[in-house]
Image 1 (cartoon, rainbow, N blue to C red):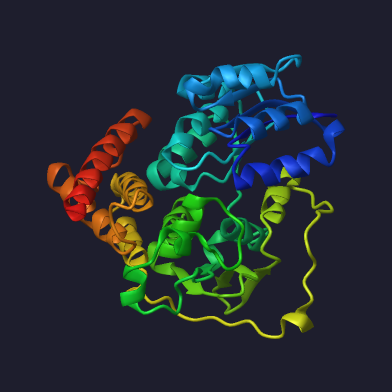
Image 2: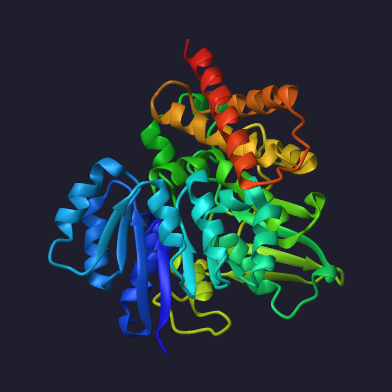
Length: 391
């Protein structure tokens, strides 16, 4: 029986890897919706290859380009934020949520109303509105499966285990391109240097987030929200080889590790085929060739995002939404050349303090609209802090 699937963010790195897996067995899937951004050529190519019901670009001014690219096909076209939510209202058995940033929040929530499976690569959904997302899934008997490589690894290590027996969760970080750089050099890091990830082939924004460890900071918060583990039992370690993706420690002292090649198709394929395991086109590890696995504590002077994440987890409530919005605004400013690499963490910290003075961060958001309002306030404040630093 064919499964109805949708891929939100199909032109990004996660989306492209998802399309790759689907295209290998097209008879097994009925593709409902594909969504992307400005890469109309790739989006239209994917829609043609998978015979999608609808293709959507986030940019309304690119709609005519998308229509022209899909002339002669049966695929419908649409554009804009409302079109994304409308696509999420189309019933599907399995949905990949891979839109980067807070833009993926509303479509992800909308898909849960159909009670299917949400494969969650949009970590911002859990960071900004974790309790709301989990409650919505429970209300609709929907299932959320993690697609971040670290959280997929934890999920797999917990299979058949009682969460109450878990003593700690350890997620790994490559350390990015600046792991061994002195602070003075990191402060002067260029955009090109920040994008040059040593292990993973990712998009610009997530590569920079990895270099600053803001990506890992988000994943710490995501671990708390998805697995319900107390913050003081969640750890991050630097593992330059990116072979061990996460470890789960149990009360009896056992430590279960998930190892695999740095290829996102493993985590995506696991979520796609769960609860089964099927053949995947990923490299098999040669442990003798790898030889050794090394780990080290992260240097929080180089990576203050990790400290900020712990403060956010301790505060709870709206702090996650502020943290994510400020991080995205600070990242925009770095990409635009307005602030330096290390200034991003300063902007986020100043924004957390500023918003807390206007409203208590510890108060939980009661709705997605509340999350959106907090996001808007935090972005504006972060942009102002970034402009102050730009002089």
